[in-house]
Length: 325
Image (cartoon, rainbow, N blue to C red; front, side, top):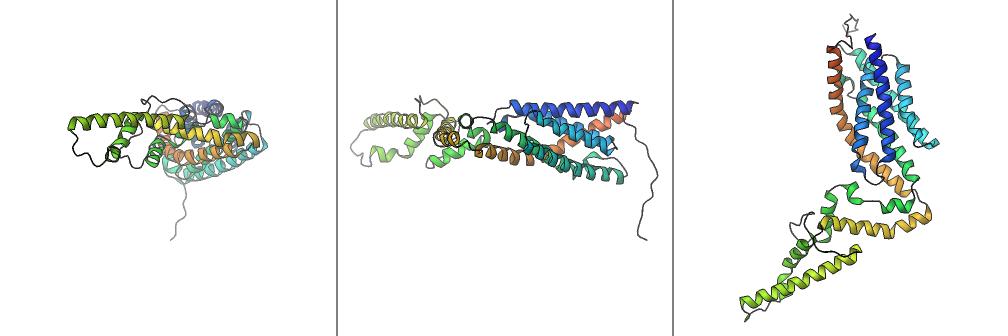
């Protein structure tokens, strides 16, 4: 009786976390892939409960029913025949993973979730990621193209290293310039690189005090010119206290808005939703495969705990095995 209640509870929890995951995609920022903390928590819990249910539920039709309901629930937020096709494909992939898991469990002398899910976890992760990326695509496809581009933040998608790479590309002559350096610091470092050229090579006959006055004058002039140039690029006044990495990323986003947004709005193109969905898929699939290893450890601990409190009963039976004589 306890085991039956546990199976029902795991069935309900798996379905509930799946619903939470799909609904979280609908409210996440369309252009910020690396801020999906809520979705990550939901799908991690979904994977753990699904793993436990597959382990203790021997009936294949119940596992099929659970995957059908869990993945099919995504249709509430992205009703489309194409999305339905991805859901069906994901269910088939998850069933392939289920087959590998059940086969290993049946052949193993001891129950070891990490071992049994060694190959099956990749199929489960892929099935989840496919539905996530598909629902994300149809969510973006319903968003106005121009609004989507205007909310597109490149540094949020490509990570913190993006700003540093942009700075190194635009200012290759400035050494040791970090993304969190201010605009004034970046301009002054650039000034130091060109100091001799700006002051002139022939400074003989000029006292040290005069050199300092000339240096201060050129430095202030260089600062004003640098701020003016960056202000023109970013489309607003720059005080010099802003972080250089953020300003550079803002310039890139501004150029994207100016060049791509009008054409997207006019042509109603699916290029951007497709690109972002593909980027999401390529980001979370390998990441999910790594995270799944740690989630399996959590599931293994929960399985062990449930055995300790006798909610899962393990029995030992004699089996016949064929061996080559």
